[in-house]
Length: 276
Length: 326
Image 1 (cartoon, chains in turn yellow, orange):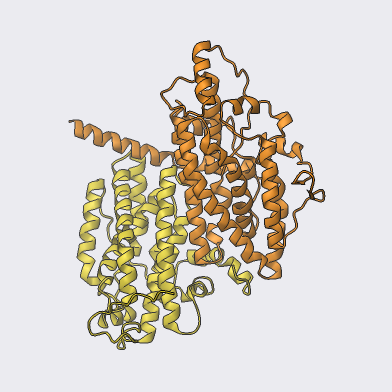
Image 2: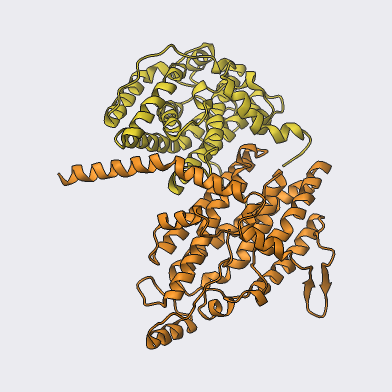
């Protein structure tokens, strides 16, 4: 058998351990919780989008929604797999996806909101993907090599999600009277979940402190600017501020998540010994 | 997925210019491709439009039974695979509609015909998906039968259809392996999983055999379609091929094919098998399948509830075009 090619190590690497293990100064539970947030956001939104499959307004739209769902499920697979390893209790990505109850899910409330009509799905996507794109841009510089690597790949996918949803927002706003009305309603409905995206709680602060993830406050203005500019192009007003609804990052979700995971987890929970 | 030709064409021999017709038939007999702008007999155009649009409808309706399990796929890997698979079906639908449009019928007209019940789609999708094993069985059997039907169509006489089939076949063969792999995992699994796998085979076996269409003796269009290279093997030939290939696959899984008459015939070099329940087949063709009403209701609902989105996109595009022109 031919020998394997040599591996080029980065400067300063000894080839053993240092680049594989998480940074020593990142607290164990912070890394676990942070990875759960990233993974759960993608998983739950991917699950929601996949509900459209076969029922979208046109075949083209069906394809684009399934595409985004696939990207998100792929991201979730990486992040949750890493979370399982970080936890070190023998749980893999599937165990985390299919054997946790609501209190242990760490996704933001926005992604778990039901699809509603197409306008609501697109408003949700636009508000989330715009944020996720900015987050992943920063995460490519994470001190955690795995997070940086996944973000580097996913940021291209998310850039497309952001673009696609922005285009739909503009199209719905500038389309017919009905589409404009539905878009305005959808934005108004979804708006209260935006502040949670920028919440700097203990985990987010600790993660920012050790270089795992960014201080999301850093791109709040960019975010607001981008939302304002797309909504201006769509010809609709930015919704007036509403009292923020928070709690997702601490496991306090909306009523919808319980139903979502009841469906999603049905098989692995009913047949805990089965391999699929 | 695929649908065999389900509707009886009436007058095949329309009044055509005999010289043109002879030249056309000679080209087809020489295995040349007919392209959209070429002259073709009206009956050829009609038959093909019907067949390709039925095929397209089957892909789109076929998203529903499998889509039923995306939200309940039992692992992240299975979820991604199933999503990608159903997405492939949507893609097939899209380029089949495009191939059919080259014959002069718009996608809207075809969809209208589906929703009004005038156009048919494969009978197989009028059966429900009850357990996760059904997702395995559909990939293994239904996509397996589809491949059997479609591989010869890569050499069908109409160029756009033949080319679409080349790509479709590649993806379908991937789907079939994925389906079989689900079955393998279930058959190597717990007693509950094996039960689901056997039950799925029991329910999907006969409907899969029906996918090849009525027996040759009751398929009056076959001769014409074969002369025009719209069809390259008869229903019964394809059905036999499918049984011969699939029975050993079932045995490898440790599953029993639900046909007491199934037996290897040494002299023929083929499996003998029992009679398909043709009464059920024709009932399903008429739209009386177990979940036919649900499938059509879901399609109509998606179309009607999406109307405002399509209208908005069209209105927006129009406004943009007007702005550009100004």
